Amino acid sequence: MLERLANAVLFQLGWLACVIGGNSLWLLVALGALVIHLLWISRWADEGRLILSVVLLGTTVDSSLRWLGVFEFNDVAPLIPLWLMLLWALLATTLRHCLQWSATPWWLGCLLGAVGGPLSYYAGGQLAGVQFPYGQLPTLIGIGLLWALLFPTLHFMARRLASSDTHD
Image 1 (tube, rainbow, N blue to C red):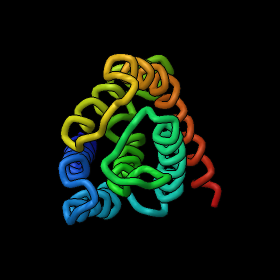
Image 2 (image 1 turned 90 degrees about the vertical axis):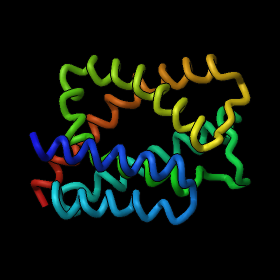
Image 3 (image 1 turned 180 degrees about the horizontal axis):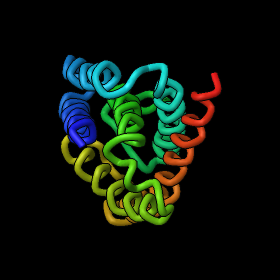
């Protein structure tokens, strides 16, 4: 119980540091939250592949959305900003810990993704100055639909990589 609470607090601290600080020294707070998770709650050997896989998938998804004009950031780059990549790493740390409850039944992950995804993007967009050129409501509905599929996929990855981690 304490581990899950600590994981949730570390994630929220890292999330806030990323969206408020952007690509500044605040990223050290988020990176610190990730390191503390790996030292106190888990280990790189147990979650490293999951974290890297989620960062790769998340960067691909959000960079594609950026390329399609769904998001506009203050910088000009082909990929999402570093702070958003770090947010994906922090999210990966929750899949086997504080958000594990949403893995089964599968529809819990769909529901959490459909509601939590848009709320997180909305709040993050407000704090980080991210624009939604297609309009706020249509964008958030689209993000909700996307995350209703994406979150169960992340849980599938967490289970799949957990079983492969035990065979190495």
